[in-house]
Amino acid sequence: MPTARRVLAELGFDQVGSYANSGNLMFSATGKSSVHEGAIRAALEAEFGFELTTFVRTASQVKALATAKPFGVIASGHTHFALLTLRPLSAREKRAVQALSNDHDEVVVLGRDVHWLIRSRSPETTLGPKRWLQALPDNPTTARNTTMLARLADIL
Image (cartoon, rainbow, N blue to C red):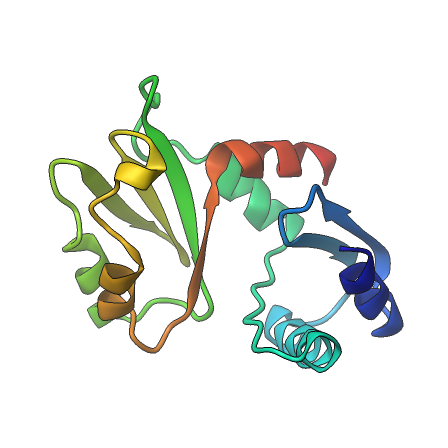
């Protein structure tokens, strides 16, 4: 994380920080998220030498993800993830994602991102990476547990 923070600072971002060792970086900037995503991705890939898809969300978007309750109160032993997409979902992608819902995993699209309830611990999901890739073949994603997002939102 120190190297990633240094790279963002060298790009000219202000108040660069990181949350734990989670791959989540924080910074202050003006301008479009998509422009920042491209610049950060290129700089991190040059630094680390491998492909690194980058997802940028504003502090208010992270807070909204962390506090959204599309499934109501989450039962003990269940897991709630937010799935961030690189690009806003098309109508076809929304249908494909929502069609993934079943008795064990429930998927809801809210705005740009996806909420995913696993009615157990996350390793017991029925929706592995292959299923997400089938639903979103041209729209990379990353998932974050909403418990972690809430802790992150508290420090933004």
